[in-house]
Each structure stands twice: as C-alpha cells, then as structure tokens.
Image (cartoon, rainbow, N blue to C red):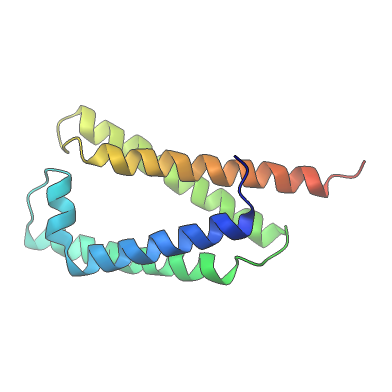
Length: 131
C-alpha cells in the first residue's frame, strides 16, 4: 500500500502529538507498558522526550503539503534514521532483558514508519527523475 507524503506526514504528526501527551502526562504508565520501573530520573527523561515528540508532530504537520524538495527529503531521511535507530535500540534492550515485551509494539511502529517514509521518499525521487 502506497501512502502519499501528505497522509503519512499527517498520521505521523498525530501519532507524535499523541505520544507527547501520553509521555508528558503519564510517563509512569508508558514505562510500565515496557516493564520499566518509574523513577524521578526516568520521569524527567520521559517528560523531556514528550517535548521532542511535540516538536516532531508540529514539524510533520507543517510540512504535510510540501512538494518533493531537499528539505522534505532531509526531514524524511532523518526520521527514517531515527525510527530505525530506535527500533534497533528497543529490540536490543528487550533482548538484554532491560525492557519487557511491550517495547516490541514501539519497535514495530518504528520499523513500519521508517519503511513508510522510505517508500514515500523512493516514489518522490522516481517522480522527480527525468525520463
């Protein structure tokens, strides 16, 4: 299934803003889904992460109507690297017993989002190519 950049960007913005709210307001619940004990330090990091999710949500919402461009490619490529990096780290933490199986949901979403942006980027490049 091929998603347009607009659809994918809007979905990503919504997901990031939702995650910003959840991580910001209930970090203990999110950590519990990964079988990680809540602490003041973990809560601090979780709330700071919430702000980063808010930033990503705003950025993806604002670029949702952009035509293929260097800036759009940079945002997509950076997000792909971030998603796949988080997926690798999450899977590694699960394998090492530092997180419970709940983290695998995040890993799956990260892999899927990275692949979706890769597919959208690939199609954008094909549309731009002469010939």
